[in-house]
Length: 454
Image 1 (cartoon, one colour):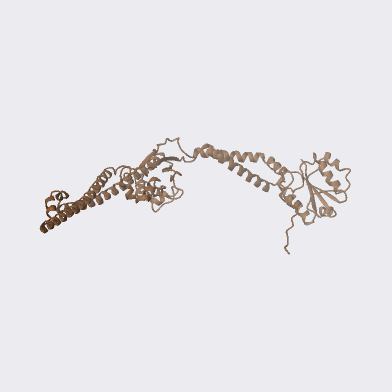
Image 2: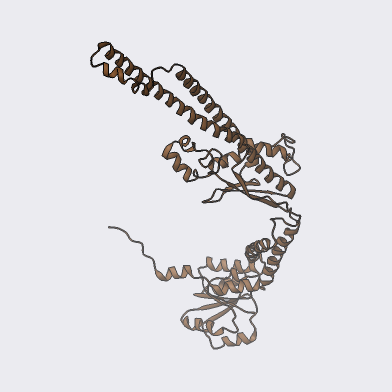
């Protein structure tokens, strides 16, 4: 048999009840503290805007034209063959996929090391005071690109555009670093293109020379007669029907013609191969001449920034931060004040509260009448004004006891079934209040309400 868990809905409602009235009175009583803390925090963030070091952000956009390379088909008609047939063609038409390789190139030591040296980026003292063993040495590529550093590279989704961004306290340095990255990246592309074009040219030229040599060899060793020789040998052909020697001569003549046809076919094949390689060689020479061009197009040039064109800190952002942190700080200030106040606060009170005894006396009277058969003690921490005290004259089941830590106090409430506390927020001693309340709990006296007098 499975055991179920029974939960009383009324108990659940009580647990989830939030006394909004109590919260309102807590905040209203601390309104000056809240205002003071809130304004101080906002003022702090505003001042921070003007005293914090300024950071400048320089960015640039590079378009990597993957289809516009000097080795592609609009420049080189043999590019499809080099790319590998249909698969190469598909890669060509799609632009070659993402820019992962380009991002690796631009962040490689071949580029970044030069950027570091050109801009004299060296290790310095930590926080400007702690000595560093590497002080004065050029920083490494890994240190330059490390997580949380000032540089960032981003491939804009769905495009062939790479955005470079660099932040620095020095606007001149920020501009120089971005500019240096672009220049060295373009130079690296030119270098790679040049090396490839020279290699391609060398290979094609070697093949062309071999094919040309083979053609010359075949030309020199060609033999046989042209096909027209048979047309001039009609007399021999007629005599071959009557003469054995004429038949032999005709057979020899046909053999020579066939041999000549084979030689011409071989020479034609070699000539076509030489012509094709010659055409490729011409394109390879053109590519070599164009190898100093780049497929990198700068869409957005880096701009030199003026002193007031900083990216952070921003006054509006700091005001918003001040509002958020001001709210949080005010909340903590209220909690701290409520828990450390030497006088009674709203947060120290229980759940059943009469917030103004004079105005809401009827609530207390209803409570007393509902417990008419019980012996009630009203424990007063402060003197009750006469205008309120007079309202208790017709109520018989109550006993007024002055709060005190004494045997007399204990004896006076010993016979009471339930108790009501009358206190004054901001006046009653909080420590004394807690001691009396703790004593009542030890005596198992049920506190049914706490009434506040102003």
